[in-house]
Length: 204
Ligand code: TYD
Figure 1 (cartoon, helix red, strand yellow):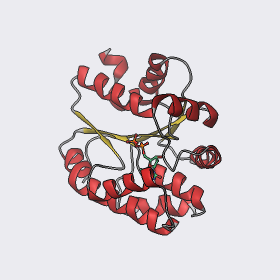
Figure 2 (cartoon, rainbow, N blue to C red):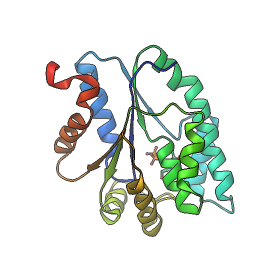
Figure 3 (cartoon, rainbow, N blue to C red):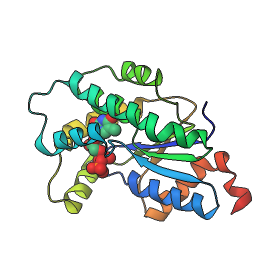
Protein backbone atom coordinates (compact mmCIF):
# COMPACT_ATOMS: atom_id res chain seq x y z
CA UNK A 1 0.00 0.00 0.00
CA UNK A 2 1.32 3.45 -0.95
CA UNK A 3 1.68 6.08 1.79
CA UNK A 4 4.44 8.56 0.91
CA UNK A 5 4.00 11.28 -1.68
CA UNK A 6 5.30 10.54 -5.17
CA UNK A 7 6.37 13.50 -7.31
CA UNK A 8 7.74 13.11 -10.80
CA UNK A 9 9.90 15.50 -12.84
CA UNK A 10 9.46 15.08 -16.59
CA UNK A 11 10.41 16.86 -19.78
CA UNK A 12 12.85 16.66 -22.67
CA UNK A 13 16.61 16.70 -22.08
CA UNK A 14 17.92 20.17 -21.22
CA UNK A 15 14.79 21.55 -19.53
CA UNK A 16 16.55 21.70 -16.16
CA UNK A 17 14.28 19.16 -14.48
CA UNK A 18 17.15 17.30 -12.76
CA UNK A 19 18.34 20.55 -11.15
CA UNK A 20 14.80 21.30 -10.01
CA UNK A 21 14.37 17.79 -8.63
CA UNK A 22 17.48 18.29 -6.49
CA UNK A 23 16.27 21.72 -5.32
CA UNK A 24 12.88 20.40 -4.21
CA UNK A 25 14.63 17.58 -2.33
CA UNK A 26 16.71 20.23 -0.55
CA UNK A 27 13.64 22.34 0.31
CA UNK A 28 11.83 19.29 1.69
CA UNK A 29 14.85 18.33 3.80
CA UNK A 30 15.00 21.88 5.18
CA UNK A 31 11.36 21.48 6.21
CA UNK A 32 12.20 18.13 7.76
CA UNK A 33 10.07 16.19 5.28
CA UNK A 34 11.81 12.81 4.80
CA UNK A 35 12.51 12.37 1.11
CA UNK A 36 14.58 10.51 -1.44
CA UNK A 37 15.50 11.58 -4.98
CA UNK A 38 15.65 8.77 -7.55
CA UNK A 39 16.30 8.76 -11.29
CA UNK A 40 15.41 6.57 -14.26
CA UNK A 41 17.11 5.04 -16.15
CA UNK A 42 18.61 3.65 -12.93
CA UNK A 43 22.16 2.51 -12.24
CA UNK A 44 20.96 -1.12 -12.09
CA UNK A 45 21.63 -3.82 -14.69
CA UNK A 46 18.81 -2.71 -17.05
CA UNK A 47 19.66 0.96 -16.55
CA UNK A 48 23.27 0.31 -17.55
CA UNK A 49 22.14 -1.58 -20.65
CA UNK A 50 20.00 1.47 -21.53
CA UNK A 51 22.90 3.87 -20.95
CA UNK A 52 24.95 1.88 -23.45
CA UNK A 53 22.11 2.37 -25.94
CA UNK A 54 22.25 6.12 -25.29
CA UNK A 55 25.99 6.33 -25.85
CA UNK A 56 26.38 3.82 -28.72
CA UNK A 57 23.13 4.49 -30.59
CA UNK A 58 20.19 2.19 -31.19
CA UNK A 59 21.99 -0.04 -33.72
CA UNK A 60 18.90 -1.82 -34.99
CA UNK A 61 17.25 -2.43 -31.63
CA UNK A 62 13.49 -2.33 -32.21
CA UNK A 63 11.27 0.23 -30.45
CA UNK A 64 9.45 -2.67 -28.73
CA UNK A 65 12.70 -4.06 -27.37
CA UNK A 66 13.83 -0.61 -26.23
CA UNK A 67 10.46 -0.16 -24.50
CA UNK A 68 10.86 -3.47 -22.69
CA UNK A 69 14.27 -2.43 -21.31
CA UNK A 70 12.83 0.75 -19.77
CA UNK A 71 9.92 -1.25 -18.33
CA UNK A 72 12.23 -3.88 -16.84
CA UNK A 73 14.37 -1.13 -15.31
CA UNK A 74 11.26 0.52 -13.82
CA UNK A 75 9.87 -2.73 -12.39
CA UNK A 76 13.15 -3.28 -10.59
CA UNK A 77 13.21 0.35 -9.37
CA UNK A 78 9.64 0.09 -8.04
CA UNK A 79 10.36 -3.12 -6.16
CA UNK A 80 13.78 -2.17 -4.78
CA UNK A 81 13.52 1.58 -4.22
CA UNK A 82 10.19 3.27 -4.87
CA UNK A 83 7.72 1.07 -2.97
CA UNK A 84 9.94 0.52 0.08
CA UNK A 85 10.34 4.32 0.47
CA UNK A 86 6.65 5.06 -0.09
CA UNK A 87 5.71 2.40 2.47
CA UNK A 88 7.97 4.17 4.99
CA UNK A 89 6.05 7.38 4.29
CA UNK A 90 9.09 8.92 2.60
CA UNK A 91 8.40 11.43 -0.19
CA UNK A 92 9.85 10.05 -3.43
CA UNK A 93 11.06 12.54 -6.06
CA UNK A 94 11.64 10.93 -9.43
CA UNK A 95 13.82 12.39 -12.17
CA UNK A 96 11.88 10.71 -15.02
CA UNK A 97 9.26 7.96 -14.79
CA UNK A 98 6.76 6.32 -17.14
CA UNK A 99 5.68 9.59 -18.78
CA UNK A 100 9.19 9.63 -20.31
CA UNK A 101 8.58 6.13 -21.65
CA UNK A 102 5.25 7.17 -23.16
CA UNK A 103 6.83 10.28 -24.72
CA UNK A 104 10.26 9.00 -25.87
CA UNK A 105 9.25 5.50 -26.98
CA UNK A 106 5.94 6.94 -28.21
CA UNK A 107 7.96 9.24 -30.47
CA UNK A 108 9.46 6.09 -32.05
CA UNK A 109 6.00 5.23 -33.37
CA UNK A 110 4.54 3.31 -30.42
CA UNK A 111 1.22 4.44 -28.94
CA UNK A 112 1.85 6.87 -26.02
CA UNK A 113 -1.52 6.39 -24.26
CA UNK A 114 -1.15 2.64 -24.48
CA UNK A 115 2.35 2.83 -22.95
CA UNK A 116 1.01 5.01 -20.12
CA UNK A 117 -1.85 2.57 -19.42
CA UNK A 118 0.45 -0.47 -19.50
CA UNK A 119 2.75 1.22 -16.97
CA UNK A 120 -0.13 2.16 -14.70
CA UNK A 121 -0.92 -1.56 -14.34
CA UNK A 122 2.26 -2.06 -12.27
CA UNK A 123 3.65 1.38 -11.39
CA UNK A 124 2.31 3.55 -8.54
CA UNK A 125 0.58 6.58 -10.04
CA UNK A 126 2.29 9.82 -8.95
CA UNK A 127 0.56 12.36 -6.76
CA UNK A 128 2.03 15.07 -8.96
CA UNK A 129 3.71 15.08 -12.37
CA UNK A 130 5.66 18.23 -13.20
CA UNK A 131 6.30 18.49 -16.91
CA UNK A 132 9.00 21.05 -17.75
CA UNK A 133 8.68 22.83 -21.07
CA UNK A 134 11.36 24.80 -22.94
CA UNK A 135 11.83 25.18 -26.68
CA UNK A 136 13.65 22.10 -28.03
CA UNK A 137 16.15 24.42 -29.78
CA UNK A 138 17.07 26.00 -26.45
CA UNK A 139 17.30 22.58 -24.79
CA UNK A 140 19.76 21.38 -27.43
CA UNK A 141 21.85 24.54 -26.96
CA UNK A 142 22.02 23.81 -23.23
CA UNK A 143 22.95 20.17 -23.81
CA UNK A 144 25.65 21.11 -26.31
CA UNK A 145 27.25 23.63 -23.98
CA UNK A 146 27.23 21.27 -20.99
CA UNK A 147 28.33 17.97 -22.56
CA UNK A 148 31.01 16.76 -24.97
CA UNK A 149 28.69 14.54 -26.90
CA UNK A 150 24.96 14.34 -27.44
CA UNK A 151 23.29 11.00 -26.84
CA UNK A 152 21.43 9.10 -29.53
CA UNK A 153 18.19 10.47 -28.03
CA UNK A 154 19.09 14.12 -28.37
CA UNK A 155 18.22 15.05 -31.95
CA UNK A 156 16.07 18.11 -32.66
CA UNK A 157 13.24 16.48 -34.64
CA UNK A 158 12.99 13.62 -32.18
CA UNK A 159 12.93 15.96 -29.16
CA UNK A 160 10.23 18.08 -30.85
CA UNK A 161 8.02 15.00 -31.18
CA UNK A 162 8.81 13.91 -27.62
CA UNK A 163 7.81 17.33 -26.28
CA UNK A 164 4.61 17.27 -28.36
CA UNK A 165 3.66 14.03 -26.62
CA UNK A 166 4.57 15.45 -23.19
CA UNK A 167 2.23 18.39 -23.93
CA UNK A 168 -0.60 16.02 -24.82
CA UNK A 169 -0.77 14.46 -21.35
CA UNK A 170 -3.70 15.39 -19.16
CA UNK A 171 -5.01 14.41 -15.76
CA UNK A 172 -5.62 15.83 -12.29
CA UNK A 173 -2.02 15.09 -11.19
CA UNK A 174 -0.33 16.87 -14.12
CA UNK A 175 1.14 20.39 -14.04
CA UNK A 176 3.12 22.08 -16.81
CA UNK A 177 6.02 24.32 -15.83
CA UNK A 178 7.50 26.75 -18.34
CA UNK A 179 11.19 26.32 -17.61
CA UNK A 180 12.22 29.90 -18.38
CA UNK A 181 13.91 32.49 -16.17
CA UNK A 182 16.44 31.84 -13.44
CA UNK A 183 16.84 28.54 -11.62
CA UNK A 184 15.33 30.13 -8.51
CA UNK A 185 12.35 31.51 -10.51
CA UNK A 186 11.62 28.00 -11.74
CA UNK A 187 12.09 26.60 -8.21
CA UNK A 188 9.38 29.01 -7.02
CA UNK A 189 7.07 27.59 -9.67
CA UNK A 190 7.88 24.07 -8.46
CA UNK A 191 7.05 25.03 -4.87
CA UNK A 192 3.78 26.63 -6.02
CA UNK A 193 2.90 23.49 -8.00
CA UNK A 194 3.46 21.17 -5.03
CA UNK A 195 2.59 23.25 -1.94
CA UNK A 196 -0.84 21.63 -1.49
CA UNK A 197 0.97 18.31 -0.97
CA UNK A 198 3.26 19.67 1.77
CA UNK A 199 1.74 22.85 3.25
CA UNK A 200 4.75 25.01 2.29
CA UNK A 201 2.61 28.08 3.01
CA UNK A 202 2.27 27.07 6.67
CA UNK A 203 5.87 26.05 7.16
CA UNK A 204 7.85 28.68 5.25
P1 TYD B 1 18.46 11.37 -18.62
O1 TYD B 1 17.48 11.83 -17.60
O2 TYD B 1 18.92 12.36 -19.62
O3 TYD B 1 19.68 10.69 -17.89
P2 TYD B 1 21.10 11.33 -17.55
O4 TYD B 1 20.82 12.77 -17.17
O5 TYD B 1 21.58 10.51 -16.41
O6 TYD B 1 21.89 11.19 -18.79
O7 TYD B 1 17.82 10.12 -19.37
C1 TYD B 1 18.52 9.51 -20.40
C2 TYD B 1 17.66 9.37 -21.63
O8 TYD B 1 16.73 8.29 -21.50
C3 TYD B 1 16.85 10.60 -21.99
O9 TYD B 1 17.25 11.04 -23.28
C4 TYD B 1 15.44 10.11 -22.02
C5 TYD B 1 15.56 8.63 -22.15
N1 TYD B 1 14.41 7.86 -21.56
C6 TYD B 1 13.55 7.20 -22.41
O10 TYD B 1 13.69 7.25 -23.63
N2 TYD B 1 12.53 6.46 -21.86
C7 TYD B 1 12.34 6.37 -20.51
O11 TYD B 1 11.41 5.67 -20.05
C8 TYD B 1 13.26 7.07 -19.64
C9 TYD B 1 13.11 6.97 -18.16
C10 TYD B 1 14.29 7.80 -20.21
